[in-house]
Amino acid sequence: MFGKKSEAVAVESVSQSVDDKKNASAEARRCTIVAKSSVFKGDIDVEGDIQIWGKVIGNIRVKEGAIRIMHAGRVEGELSAPEIIIDGDVEGTCCAATLDILEHGELRGISRCSSMSIKRGGLFFGQSEQVENKTASERVVPIKDTNNDKSKDKATVKTSA
Image (tube, rainbow, N blue to C red; front, side, top):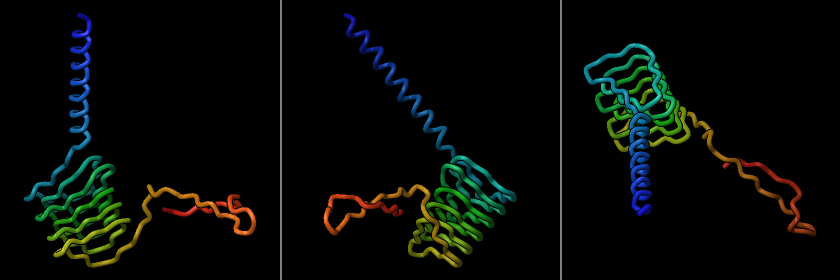
């Protein structure tokens, strides 16, 4: 008698929490779009993703998300984001953790990233500077004494992973 009511309440609360998570993830993945026929002059600061179909003359900074330069897109300026995907034309500096230049993509300028890939057909003209990944964890490796006691640790050395 009481078991059915408690089960129904549990199902309702679970479905409400699932709906809340869906709404939160939809809000977290907001996407700004610069339309194909538009020209934007100035700096852009965004917290979600941004897709460039038109032309942007200025700097684009994304805190949490990705910058996607679509096939018809063109950017002249500095791009800064955790992830940058180029399938159009970029002239300037790209600062990212990961940078992908796709088949129709072209980057003329400076690449500052920890991971970069260029698909067949993609073009890169300029300078590439490797940046250390900030999330890389440090490993502690013990140095063993080789003389008498091999199980004793004499010192530790920190190395980057």
